[in-house]
Image (cartoon, rainbow, N blue to C red; front, side, top):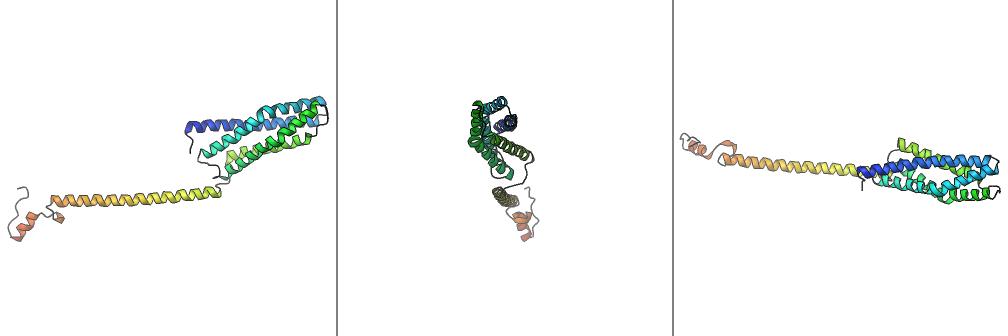
Length: 225
């Protein structure tokens, strides 16, 4: 099912906004994790990890799921399809992996780091919080570039669908030509019948009256009599 123009534009705007928001949020989380890990100050570490917890609790999950769902909607509701083009297919899987890692890895690590910082104990998840935002930021940058360039062409399924569509179009054109030929022959037959009726049923435009006159060697009577 193809989206109409207005829903397609609305979905596109939502997808672009949340995708850029996810990219910016990942950059902010990376900056906070670097500050908390390298500062050497318990107060800075606490402030950094508590800020990260606010972002992961309130923002990152809605943005991640909205990005994934709006992307799937645009893929299935437009000519791009979900598995027809390689760039769409790869972007879908990368977004799904990033969403899953956010739910099951990043949020627990941020919660653990915030708890340790509040308790003023060494943060065990500090290195993990450097690695996770770096990977997610790289994924989102890659997806942004891919969305702009749209490389790599069709998938195997996309090629099959295109070949089937081309074959179906050729069959339709052949059927149209055959139907047009039958119509032309019928029109020609009706024209010949009409012409034969106008000439007294004798082909070639010679009337029956003229043929009889020639047979008895009498000058033909004018056709208008």
